[in-house]
Image (cartoon, rainbow, N blue to C red; front, side, top):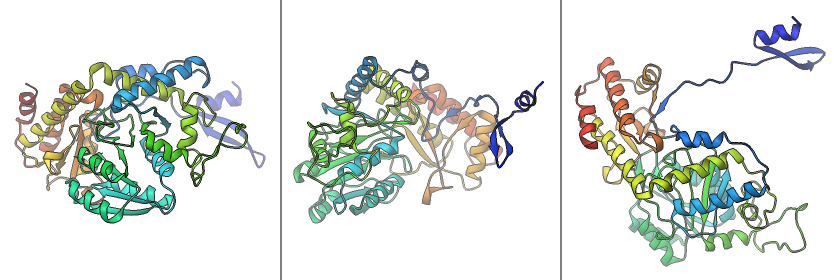
Length: 430
């Protein structure tokens, strides 16, 4: 046996020389992650059909079949977003890439943006907007509540922003911000309206055109039932026009027929939506190499949602989330936040004072293979966040999670009502 073969047998391999000495790199084991039931605030278990789609063969980015799939994705997500927007496409990256692409492309240094902050992800919008150089004004709402439209109307009149940016479903608090009235206010004042709907899309109503939304970005890893790594977005004609005024076609691909925008160049190349729109448009002007496997995943997520039907999918999430809440309350646990505005797909529940929340979560994962979430900032260690999303918005997932959590709480001597949580959830399902 050669020395290289002996190294491979032990999990090591020589990869080269550094200062005339061989370097050994560990190969590690063949990838074989454990099976988990992901019942946290996201990511969640993907639909089996999405796994199958991801495994399909790679093709070139300008292959007519590939550009045909891109056109299909645009059409499918118009259905998901409930919009006629031509500029509907994917950003290659996690949900945050979609957020950043919209904000960096719309906002110039000095532009005013108004942001209601109902949780951790409202603060994220502020963070990105400030990095762009925008002037940010916040409406700070206690965690567990949503922003009243009257506050938005008053601040909009006083501040006169270019953009209202908000989060629909903020998983840090489990709250779902109503958008219809905010859209009317923006429409009346001529203000662009952007929403991050990553956590809420496909589990709660989202009506882009009816609610006067100019830009929406989402991710796949929650109610859409896919992996993290692709961010569907949609832009109104008005929003696209604002972005295209900042258009800059790169040297090396710029042709005589291309015109540059008259406004300040977008400060990110990768997240330059003017260029991304050209890449997804008829010219297919080169910008990046589309993430083929993630496009397959996004396409299948949308097909599953539209095939089942928006109303049916949302009802399924509402039923599963309601059953989870009913079971937790029957156990004697207190739910977090204003339940009138809770998302259908995530329940926040106070951790019993006599137990350590992280210890229970870890043991739940190790013994039952079930993951639930903690929270951020002022809520860390105070509440768990339990999700019922996408493929996991099913009765068997809810019942298994409640049974396992009850067993852990009994083991850790929490003061709960034993033996009733699963029955309460079953009654809710009917």
